[in-house]
Image 1 (tube, rainbow, N blue to C red):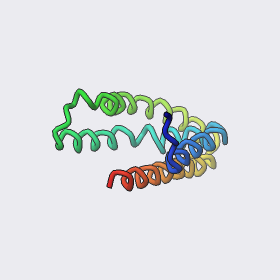
Image 2: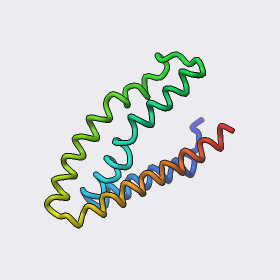
Image 3: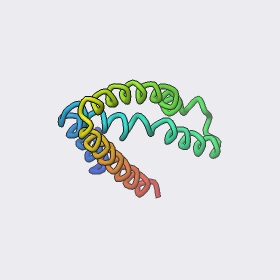
Image 4: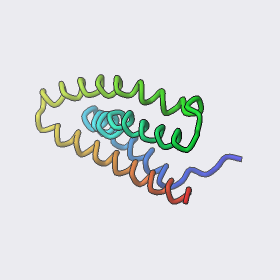
Length: 118
């Protein structure tokens, strides 16, 4: 039986889709600033926590892969986003706003996840 998607999880998914549908600047703001750019540092902390609790690093491949790969993804997206902002400086605010919305949705997701664990 398939488990129901939690409301905070669905909100994160819907927020990312909504921002990406708003156009390239909002989509790149959400994906680059609100996701890929923060993942390596964020997942590195998760790995530290799990290994401190005795979890074998081999079981943390998902997190390790993203720590290694997402920096490159973020750099690529940032380069494209920077070009867009150079073409239209007013779009910088839209990119930052989209990144903030994505991060807030992620924080709600993590708060809900923490509530389930406790």
